[in-house]
Length: 162
Image 1 (tube, rainbow, N blue to C red):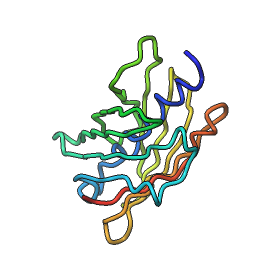
Image 2 (image 1 turned 90 degrees about the vertical axis):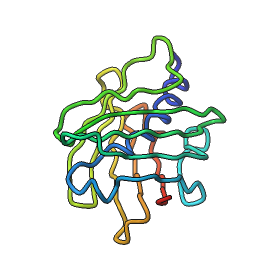
Image 3 (image 1 turned 180 degrees about the horizontal axis):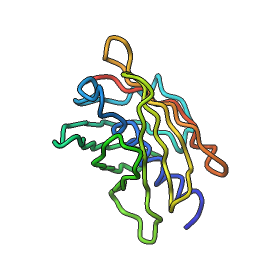
Image 4 (image 1 turned 135 degrees about the vertical axis):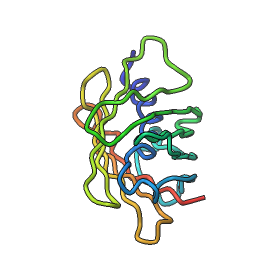
């Protein structure tokens, strides 16, 4: 699989990063969010131009996020059910790419409004992200830093509460 194809798949999965980072204080993040492309920054071919995400309580200390994003003219969907416990959780993307390595994510709480995520592709960490909720609870900022050959994934995506 080419690096560009991997990057596009991971870009779609990064939408899941935004929507899957919280348990303690999670209530503030539960709901529907819409990407603000004018306020977002990143590599044009790899940064979503449109997107929505929804976070819901899955019960038992777990949460479920579903996101849809358009990257490079392709719309994809990612889903994850998670808890903030330092364990890796599988990110499922649609459309699935045959032979694509698994995408995993682990999460940790920094404060009530800031969470740090780690994204792994085939077991290799490729990006970290800080998710921050504004004091009024209406803006969610996702600052992603790509690692190594995935450095071009570095971006800032801004979501507004629906």
